[in-house]
Length: 176
Image (cartoon, rainbow, N blue to C red; front, side, top):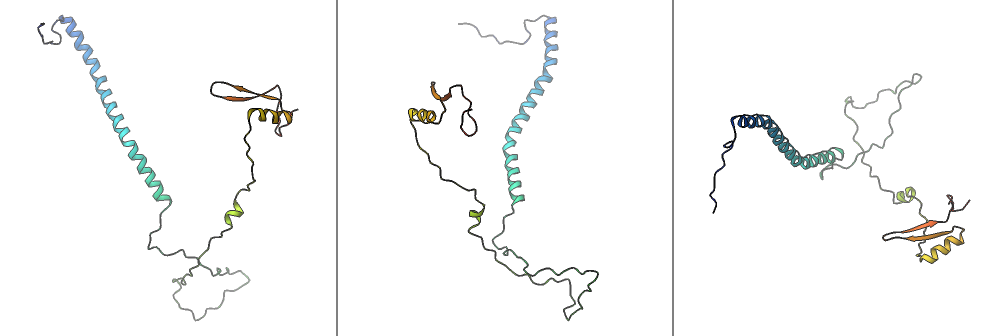
């Protein structure tokens, strides 16, 4: 059995070695503290990032589209046309027996606007019927050859490529 000896730092060092060790320690301590602070800040930042993203998303959704409350009144639209502005050659109409309180606007009229069921049909992109037909390799090559496009298939481990025989294909699938 070996005896267990406690290790005391600097026990086997000369006075010059001990001084050198203290100088190295003095140089390294600020670096070790700085790295520890950076590590702590990085961990705190990583922990706070999801919270900041959630807060930003919540702010964006609530500030852009305020949702109506269930007890909010329906949309109000005025249906009467605005009064024309007086022109230099036309005098304003004479006052009538209307109330003298001009600051109170007339009561609004409620107008319900119905959706047009044909709106999507008018603005939808035109669609054309497309026909999809599965072809075997031989049928594909025969179809290309019938159109004047000589080609072949190249099979590799994970891929199949269509190779054209020294021809340039134009936009309308014609060869020059």
